[in-house]
Image (cartoon, rainbow, N blue to C red; front, side):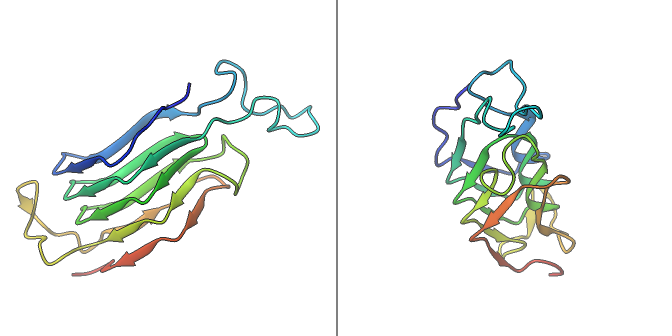
Length: 155
């Protein structure tokens, strides 16, 4: 099903994730039909993806990550900003549900590992020295384009 609109949300100080797409978001033209037909000339064309745009998230001081998607079709995170998340800024786990390197991914994001204001994350000591910027997909095809990283690593 189409997502509709998801724009300019703020998440902070959550026990785990600022945004969590759990477990599957694989929007297709025909929702109950397979996303891939290996017998077709173009295996992706028999049931085209429907793009789910998430725009303008600001996510900070979450105990795990600013945002995570577990099984994502053509899910695009556009203009996200994450700051002071303890484990990582952004994560996408599996992205093999759409045509590779043409859709699903993270676009024009700012990922700040730690800032001058990281004295606490949800009331816990801000030891996010092991924080990483992006944890990319365990499968092929995810795009990362136009991302700026600041203060990633030890503080």
